[in-house]
Amino acid sequence: MATNLIVRNVDEDLVLALKQAAAAHGRSAEAEHREILRAVLQRPPRRSVAEVLASMPNVGEDADFDFRNKAA
Image (cartoon, rainbow, N blue to C red; front, side):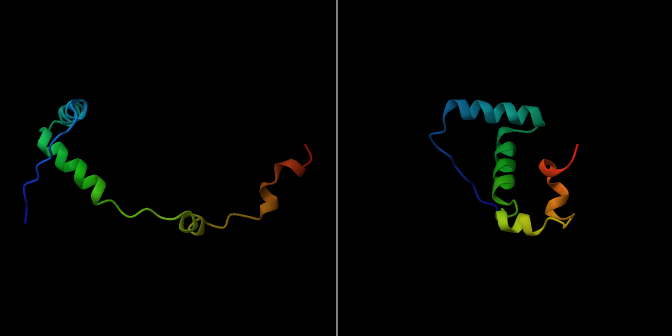
């Protein structure tokens, strides 16, 4: 169920940035605030470096990429 959220003591420069972003996206500051919260809090979890490296395809041997020992 939806709930109200009040944010106090927000710096004026952040309020201005929120209003500018809202205007650029054609929505109210409140709608922009909801979208920012949704985008940040519902994004997929970050993967570790090991997970990213493990997901890379095997595209050759290390020697295939060693440009320092190749004849010109």
